[in-house]
Amino acid sequence: MGQKLLMKGNEAIAEAAIRAGCLHYFGYPITPQTEISHYMAKKLPKVGGVFLQAESEVAAINMVYGSGSTGTRVMTSSSSPGISLKQEGLSYIAGSQIPAVVVNIVRSGPGLGGIQPAQSDYFQSCKGGGHGDYRQIVLAPSSVQELYELTVEAFNLADRYRMVAMIMGDGNLGQMMEVVEFRNEEPIEHYDKQWATVGHENSREQNVVTSIHLNPAVLEKMNLDLQEKYRVIKEKECRYEIYNQDADIFIVAYGIVARIAKSVIEMAKDKGINVGLLRPITLWPFPDQAFDQVIDKAKAFLTVEMSSGQMLEDVKLALNGRKPVYFHGRMGGMVPARDDIMKEIRNIYNLHVKND
Amino acid sequence: MAIVFQKPKALKDTPMHYCPGCTHGIAHRLVAEALDELDIEGKTIGIASVGCSYNSYDYFGCDMIQAPHGRAPAVATGVKRSKPDNVVFTYQGDGDLAAIGTAEIVHAAARGEKITVIFINNTIYGMTSGQMAPTTLLNQYSTTTPYGRIADQHGFPINVCEMLATLEGPAYIERVSLHDVKHIKKAKQAVKKAFKVQIANKGFSLVELLSTCPTNWGLSPVESLKRVEDDMIPHYPLGVFKGKDLEV
Image 1 (cartoon, each protein chain N blue to C red):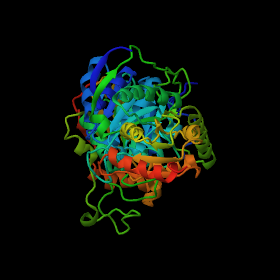
Image 2 (image 1 turned 180 degrees about the vertical axis):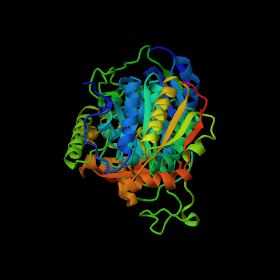
Image 3 (image 1 turned 180 degrees about the horizontal axis):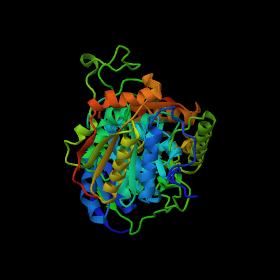
Image 4 (image 1 turned 30 degrees about the horizontal axis):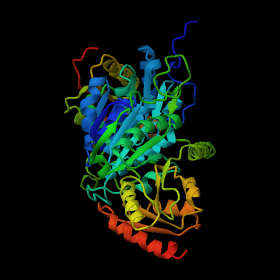
């Protein structure tokens, strides 16, 4: 590893993108992710890149669609209400199979909501926020270091599968400062983008980037191809962390909440309760197999989210009734407190572990 | 024997789906002739929009991208900024450009994006079957103005060229008509100039082509051409609105 820098989460994302070879950025201002734009506006012109402040989120995602169609590594970033506006573009990008990286530094909703952190865009990000049967890879970092590493990885995943890879952080992660240790060289994957619309130069057939197929049989085939791609991704690209594998009770949490969970685990240990953490790093594909690794010993699971319980549904699907699942969530920009989570753990312990 | 007239190279040999008497075919031809004569098809990227010309990539031979409704200027911006040495054009109708895509066209023009916009104004939504467009004339019938467009209820038609010409960004804006041979010849020069402006890196260029929609106007092709001359040109005067003295 190389240089160490104290950085804001948002800046780490921007720096990671540039290191990953993304020199083209299109965005629109929205709190709490504006530092990404500021960083790009300052740095990109100096390295021969393109920074453009679009007239809207809608325009920004379509600029990404155009730039990505030429095979260029490209990114946009926003926060929840802005990401809602991008859904049309995200659906087109999915249908046209264009690689792009999109950052969502989630704030609380619904509506204009607030600027405090939340995880309430899980459904929108993981279940297809726009129209049509599509998915996007959703990566959920839980530290500034991971914001950097997963952003680099997002560009490789986007190129590898020709689709959107989304970094889903939250207002906390975007704004907090931590030390980041950068690699001397980034593991950039290179792909031959023969599909790109860069002008045929009279030397090959026309390339067309499109998502419209009025013949239903052709459109169904296109959908089947997409679903096959998603199947492969689900098989190969699930990422997760299991902490304290032999635990009796598992907290399932991602992003900043997983950090809180780790300190709850320490509190529980002092009280003689054996608690572990199952942290999905890819929210889509959701790492179902991680649950199989702990299910034999685990007595119960507690999902903790900054939402009304969105990932909770995927946890229940993964467990498929095999073990009890509990939930603790806060909304509106409130962050789950350690003591409150500990209270839930104690209840679960009394119900499922104590007299076992 | 010498060939005096043939299909432009930049048009594919695909039968067009446009209705009889529709001027899209002529507009396509003018764009393709410009690509041929400037020898730029190989480095051109076209942006198809949403509307009757959603699949213009089936007719144009250059590389193309199909854009969401109204977003073609934003998609074109992304392409041009990432590939500044390529030639980039959008092909958009009046519903696409002047209603749902108003923000995108205004800001692409204001930024002076070095793209060329081919703007088809036939005063109606064609593909969705004849609804009122922002360009629909007062008293004009449409499926959503069955009693005619009434200013008090539906507002007034938008003159896109005049509106965009108030901006500093555009280098060249002209309105032409496709209703007869004389005007088609003029239109051809305008389309070609718009591409030359882009190649010369002068800035944003837009050509509005007054066009027909016999199917949704409920007129014959000949009556439609006459309507362009009699009803549309008085409201949408022809001419250069920006870049009159621009030499390229």
